[in-house]
Image (cartoon, rainbow, N blue to C red):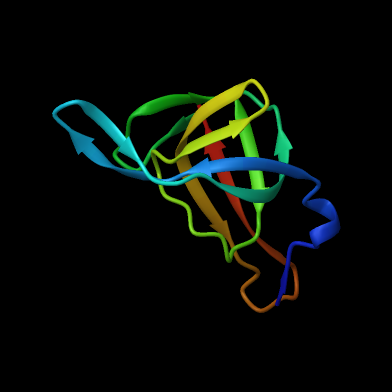
Length: 104
């Protein structure tokens, strides 16, 4: 079992964790930086509650990253929310393990 090589994680994005919703709107935590591979790919997906959403950006990152749906992603002029997180494991075959993060 091997994680995705760090050399492939050439992009840096800001991740601001979603904390909750209050009477004044959504609340977010403190932004941190995450290494990833960013791909501009448009696709129609279903989120965890079955809604169809359009994803315009896909991020590939280490499985050690702690991410949640509705977290905010910032990269340059891109400001997006995480729609879905797909863990990819190798099942013991020795392939790269990573998270595929689909953003609005």
